[in-house]
Image (cartoon, rainbow, N blue to C red; front, side, top):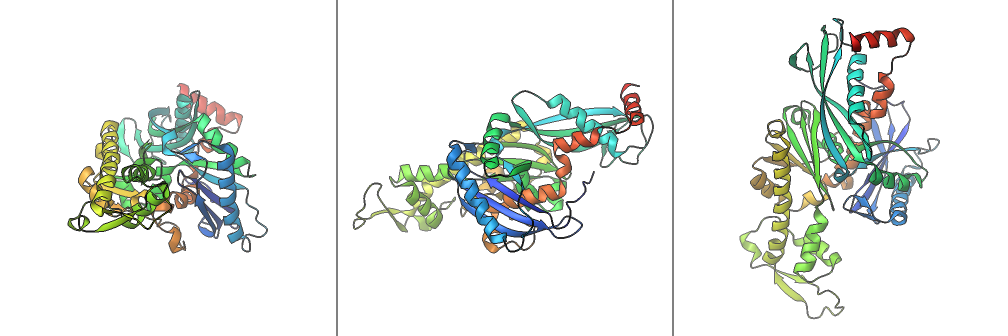
Length: 422
């Protein structure tokens, strides 16, 4: 099922609200196929957000407003006459939950059409609705026809019973409403939400990785989220409330320095794997609360690495345990792609290969052309993926499924009733 592309010239913004930074891409549709050109970019440190949750509405609102304003200023000359109205927003992985359903609908020996698939998706949505949860994604991951499995695309095929395996993602309603409050205060409408690791995967994975099986691990400041792709679709997602900021906190405590200095030390000298040279290399660690830096605290670099490595190992081991418990091990394949700002710590790829026993690479946005070098790395994978999602996968938005599943005329309603009941 392919949705109609957005009209040429229309403007959309992707807003990625993270625990360490907030980023906004403003893009315009440049052709009839729905391809985007990024015109404006804004990003700044996140204030009022911790571990994927809004903890200060006023501060978060101000951070969002300033980020969007910076992107609007960059794009002002080009998008004149196309005021920004809608944004695609990420949903932090800690607020998402995966649900798998198998739904069967009757086709009465006729050719399977889009409407039959939409009826199955709508039926699954009805089963998944619960208080305190909002539907975010409705993703068909596999089909069967008259009991014959592993059908990739049943449209046009003839049968009596169509089975659809469906992956639904729901979000925690109170947490999402807090995000919505901050965004709407900036006079923006939320066009859709997309789970962070899903957006990162759409941005960074090549088609073969999506088809054959791959796990995306998106390591942010306060949350590490991960998604499994197989057969071209996301089949599982989960998250841990741990990320790069926890590494920074460990450094600050272990070396008795400030959080700002700990972040600087992590960036300049940090590594996920110990080397022989670490013992002989000495780094200068400012002491917390002391302005006089004439008596620096010299420590071997090995001490810093000895603090970083155990925390990263813990995050990777917990991720591995969650994946093993999920039952999607075979579909996950032997390929892992790391994204997110925290994934840029040197040596993390090698450490991940050891802990996860898989082939690991660092991901970057590959599906949007013309991104500036500064925002074309792992830290902006989710932001870029939000644009890819609305361009290629907006038919997975639950509201779109519901609207398209409803039959129009009275005769169409009668036919659907007969299919479902006879």
